[in-house]
Image: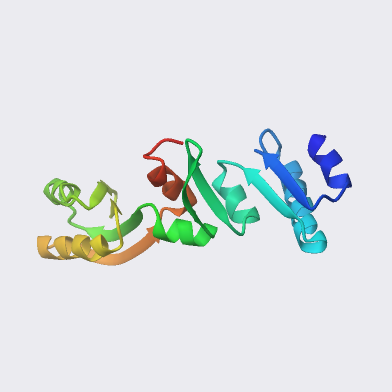
Length: 166
């Protein structure tokens, strides 16, 4: 109700603290539409605090991550997701032995390594480690069917910036 009252006045600056907290999906979507309209049609600036990565991706052009009152990173949601946080590598195939998983996991640039069914899931600290991990798998004699690389997204970037604490 407080947000609705603020929107009626079509403010030039709207400051919101966790605006979608406690809202169901239809109400959250309606709020997002109103905020988009306020920015697009009225030229308003919306400053919001949230820990919801989906909301950040949906609403924000620029993001600042704060820790104890200090900005520790700033940029677009895409730039933070791509340049901060871990890279995830999924290697599909066979022959991923426990020794191979331990060897990969022992690397300083590997944050986590595990084998699941026909895949080896590896989280690395930077993109450069991806090739080294794939080389280890090839050298082990395991069969590789596919390799997929992705960043951990905003959630992973946020955790990395704040030392794993959300």
